[in-house]
Length: 111
Length: 115
Image (tube, rainbow over all chains, first blue to last red; front, side, top):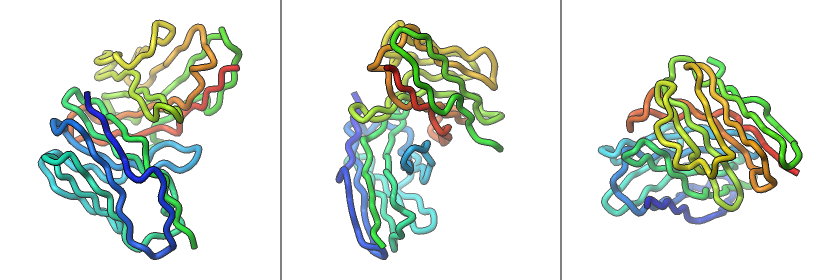
Protein backbone atom coordinates (compact mmCIF):
# COMPACT_ATOMS: atom_id res chain seq x y z
CA UNK A 1 0.00 0.00 0.00
CA UNK A 2 1.37 3.39 -1.03
CA UNK A 3 2.24 5.70 1.85
CA UNK A 4 3.36 9.30 1.52
CA UNK A 5 5.28 11.06 4.27
CA UNK A 6 6.19 14.74 4.50
CA UNK A 7 8.91 16.15 6.69
CA UNK A 8 8.90 18.47 8.53
CA UNK A 9 5.29 18.77 9.69
CA UNK A 10 5.81 22.47 10.34
CA UNK A 11 8.48 24.99 9.41
CA UNK A 12 9.00 28.63 10.35
CA UNK A 13 11.57 30.74 8.49
CA UNK A 14 12.42 34.44 8.18
CA UNK A 15 11.52 36.21 4.96
CA UNK A 16 14.08 35.90 2.19
CA UNK A 17 15.34 32.48 3.19
CA UNK A 18 15.54 29.62 0.70
CA UNK A 19 13.89 26.45 1.96
CA UNK A 20 13.28 22.80 1.09
CA UNK A 21 10.24 20.69 1.83
CA UNK A 22 10.58 16.92 1.70
CA UNK A 23 8.26 14.18 0.53
CA UNK A 24 8.85 10.43 0.47
CA UNK A 25 6.74 7.58 -0.86
CA UNK A 26 6.97 3.83 -0.40
CA UNK A 27 6.01 2.48 -3.85
CA UNK A 28 7.96 3.77 -6.86
CA UNK A 29 5.25 2.62 -9.32
CA UNK A 30 3.70 6.05 -9.77
CA UNK A 31 2.33 8.01 -12.73
CA UNK A 32 3.21 11.41 -11.35
CA UNK A 33 3.86 13.46 -8.26
CA UNK A 34 2.12 16.73 -7.53
CA UNK A 35 2.76 19.51 -5.08
CA UNK A 36 -0.23 21.51 -3.86
CA UNK A 37 -0.68 24.56 -1.70
CA UNK A 38 -3.58 24.91 0.74
CA UNK A 39 -4.42 28.18 2.47
CA UNK A 40 -6.44 28.02 5.72
CA UNK A 41 -10.10 27.31 5.03
CA UNK A 42 -9.50 27.02 1.30
CA UNK A 43 -9.18 24.34 -1.33
CA UNK A 44 -5.99 23.05 -2.89
CA UNK A 45 -4.05 24.85 -5.59
CA UNK A 46 -1.82 22.78 -7.84
CA UNK A 47 1.75 24.14 -7.90
CA UNK A 48 3.78 21.64 -9.90
CA UNK A 49 3.22 18.26 -11.51
CA UNK A 50 6.19 16.00 -12.29
CA UNK A 51 5.62 13.08 -14.63
CA UNK A 52 7.18 9.78 -13.59
CA UNK A 53 9.68 10.09 -16.45
CA UNK A 54 10.78 13.59 -15.42
CA UNK A 55 13.34 14.66 -12.85
CA UNK A 56 12.18 18.18 -12.04
CA UNK A 57 9.78 20.99 -12.80
CA UNK A 58 10.14 24.71 -12.20
CA UNK A 59 7.62 27.50 -11.85
CA UNK A 60 8.86 30.91 -10.81
CA UNK A 61 10.53 30.64 -7.40
CA UNK A 62 9.46 27.01 -7.04
CA UNK A 63 11.44 23.97 -8.12
CA UNK A 64 10.33 20.40 -7.53
CA UNK A 65 12.52 17.35 -8.03
CA UNK A 66 11.64 13.69 -8.27
CA UNK A 67 13.84 10.66 -7.61
CA UNK A 68 11.50 7.76 -8.25
CA UNK A 69 14.02 5.04 -7.47
CA UNK A 70 14.61 6.34 -3.96
CA UNK A 71 10.98 7.38 -3.46
CA UNK A 72 11.73 11.03 -2.77
CA UNK A 73 10.71 14.47 -3.91
CA UNK A 74 11.70 17.91 -2.75
CA UNK A 75 10.03 21.28 -3.20
CA UNK A 76 12.51 24.14 -3.18
CA UNK A 77 11.21 27.65 -2.54
CA UNK A 78 13.65 30.47 -3.28
CA UNK A 79 13.62 33.83 -1.54
CA UNK A 80 10.60 33.02 0.62
CA UNK A 81 7.92 35.69 1.22
CA UNK A 82 5.20 36.03 3.87
CA UNK A 83 2.66 35.27 1.12
CA UNK A 84 4.18 31.81 0.80
CA UNK A 85 2.79 30.92 4.23
CA UNK A 86 0.43 27.98 3.74
CA UNK A 87 0.30 24.21 4.01
CA UNK A 88 2.13 22.38 1.23
CA UNK A 89 0.88 18.95 0.27
CA UNK A 90 2.65 16.30 -1.74
CA UNK A 91 0.61 13.66 -3.59
CA UNK A 92 1.53 10.72 -5.78
CA UNK A 93 -0.73 9.27 -8.44
CA UNK A 94 -0.72 5.48 -8.33
CA UNK A 95 -1.20 3.30 -11.36
CA UNK A 96 -4.93 3.15 -10.69
CA UNK A 97 -5.14 6.90 -11.24
CA UNK A 98 -5.66 7.70 -7.56
CA UNK A 99 -3.91 10.55 -5.75
CA UNK A 100 -2.44 9.60 -2.37
CA UNK A 101 -1.57 12.56 -0.18
CA UNK A 102 0.97 13.22 2.52
CA UNK A 103 -0.07 14.99 5.72
CA UNK A 104 1.45 18.26 4.61
CA UNK A 105 4.06 20.74 5.81
CA UNK A 106 2.73 23.90 7.43
CA UNK A 107 5.01 26.76 6.38
CA UNK A 108 5.18 30.11 8.12
CA UNK A 109 7.36 32.87 6.64
CA UNK A 110 7.94 35.68 9.11
CA UNK A 111 8.38 39.27 7.85
CA UNK B 1 -13.67 29.36 -16.26
CA UNK B 2 -15.26 29.42 -12.81
CA UNK B 3 -13.31 26.40 -11.61
CA UNK B 4 -14.83 23.54 -9.65
CA UNK B 5 -17.95 24.69 -7.82
CA UNK B 6 -19.16 23.11 -4.61
CA UNK B 7 -22.25 23.76 -2.55
CA UNK B 8 -22.99 24.36 0.18
CA UNK B 9 -19.73 25.81 1.52
CA UNK B 10 -20.77 25.08 5.09
CA UNK B 11 -23.31 22.61 6.44
CA UNK B 12 -24.30 22.06 10.04
CA UNK B 13 -26.71 19.25 10.72
CA UNK B 14 -27.82 16.94 13.48
CA UNK B 15 -26.91 13.31 13.79
CA UNK B 16 -29.24 11.09 11.80
CA UNK B 17 -30.10 13.69 9.16
CA UNK B 18 -29.43 13.21 5.47
CA UNK B 19 -26.72 15.41 3.97
CA UNK B 20 -26.22 16.07 0.26
CA UNK B 21 -23.09 17.75 -1.06
CA UNK B 22 -22.96 19.02 -4.63
CA UNK B 23 -20.23 19.52 -7.17
CA UNK B 24 -19.99 21.04 -10.63
CA UNK B 25 -16.72 20.10 -12.35
CA UNK B 26 -14.80 22.29 -14.78
CA UNK B 27 -16.47 22.21 -18.18
CA UNK B 28 -14.82 19.66 -20.46
CA UNK B 29 -13.27 17.64 -17.65
CA UNK B 30 -14.30 14.00 -17.76
CA UNK B 31 -12.97 12.80 -14.41
CA UNK B 32 -14.40 13.77 -11.03
CA UNK B 33 -13.09 12.96 -7.58
CA UNK B 34 -14.56 13.23 -4.06
CA UNK B 35 -12.10 13.61 -1.14
CA UNK B 36 -12.50 13.99 2.60
CA UNK B 37 -10.05 15.92 4.78
CA UNK B 38 -9.74 15.51 8.55
CA UNK B 39 -7.01 16.41 10.99
CA UNK B 40 -6.48 12.78 11.93
CA UNK B 41 -6.45 11.15 8.49
CA UNK B 42 -5.51 14.00 6.16
CA UNK B 43 -6.88 13.96 2.61
CA UNK B 44 -8.45 10.69 1.49
CA UNK B 45 -10.02 9.78 -1.83
CA UNK B 46 -13.57 8.53 -1.39
CA UNK B 47 -14.64 7.80 -4.96
CA UNK B 48 -13.91 8.86 -8.50
CA UNK B 49 -15.80 8.88 -11.78
CA UNK B 50 -14.61 8.75 -15.36
CA UNK B 51 -17.12 9.77 -18.03
CA UNK B 52 -19.86 9.73 -15.35
CA UNK B 53 -19.14 6.10 -14.41
CA UNK B 54 -17.87 5.25 -10.91
CA UNK B 55 -14.41 3.70 -11.31
CA UNK B 56 -13.20 3.18 -7.75
CA UNK B 57 -15.32 3.57 -4.63
CA UNK B 58 -13.01 1.65 -2.32
CA UNK B 59 -12.50 4.76 -0.21
CA UNK B 60 -16.18 5.17 0.63
CA UNK B 61 -16.23 4.50 4.37
CA UNK B 62 -19.50 2.60 4.60
CA UNK B 63 -22.95 2.12 3.13
CA UNK B 64 -24.16 5.38 4.62
CA UNK B 65 -22.16 7.14 1.89
CA UNK B 66 -23.26 7.19 -1.73
CA UNK B 67 -22.24 9.23 -4.77
CA UNK B 68 -23.82 9.81 -8.14
CA UNK B 69 -22.91 11.56 -11.33
CA UNK B 70 -26.05 11.79 -13.47
CA UNK B 71 -24.35 13.91 -16.13
CA UNK B 72 -21.00 15.44 -17.02
CA UNK B 73 -21.67 18.66 -15.16
CA UNK B 74 -23.02 17.52 -11.81
CA UNK B 75 -22.24 15.12 -8.99
CA UNK B 76 -23.60 14.53 -5.50
CA UNK B 77 -22.20 12.92 -2.38
CA UNK B 78 -24.90 11.83 0.06
CA UNK B 79 -24.57 10.72 3.66
CA UNK B 80 -27.61 9.06 5.18
CA UNK B 81 -27.83 8.92 8.15
CA UNK B 82 -25.06 11.32 9.15
CA UNK B 83 -22.94 10.78 12.28
CA UNK B 84 -20.64 13.13 14.22
CA UNK B 85 -17.57 11.28 12.93
CA UNK B 86 -18.51 12.35 9.41
CA UNK B 87 -17.57 15.93 10.33
CA UNK B 88 -14.84 16.95 7.90
CA UNK B 89 -14.14 19.08 4.85
CA UNK B 90 -15.29 17.38 1.66
CA UNK B 91 -13.53 18.37 -1.55
CA UNK B 92 -14.51 17.73 -5.13
CA UNK B 93 -11.86 17.80 -7.87
CA UNK B 94 -11.93 17.35 -11.62
CA UNK B 95 -9.41 16.64 -14.36
CA UNK B 96 -9.25 16.02 -18.09
CA UNK B 97 -8.59 12.34 -17.44
CA UNK B 98 -6.99 9.95 -15.03
CA UNK B 99 -3.64 9.54 -16.76
CA UNK B 100 -0.43 10.81 -15.26
CA UNK B 101 -0.56 13.83 -17.58
CA UNK B 102 -3.58 15.38 -15.94
CA UNK B 103 -3.64 17.81 -13.03
CA UNK B 104 -6.55 17.69 -10.65
CA UNK B 105 -8.28 20.97 -9.91
CA UNK B 106 -9.94 21.25 -6.53
CA UNK B 107 -13.07 23.07 -5.45
CA UNK B 108 -13.19 25.21 -2.29
CA UNK B 109 -14.69 22.38 -0.23
CA UNK B 110 -17.76 21.89 1.94
CA UNK B 111 -17.16 22.05 5.68
CA UNK B 112 -19.59 19.60 7.27
CA UNK B 113 -20.36 19.59 10.98
CA UNK B 114 -22.60 16.88 12.36
CA UNK B 115 -23.79 17.57 15.90
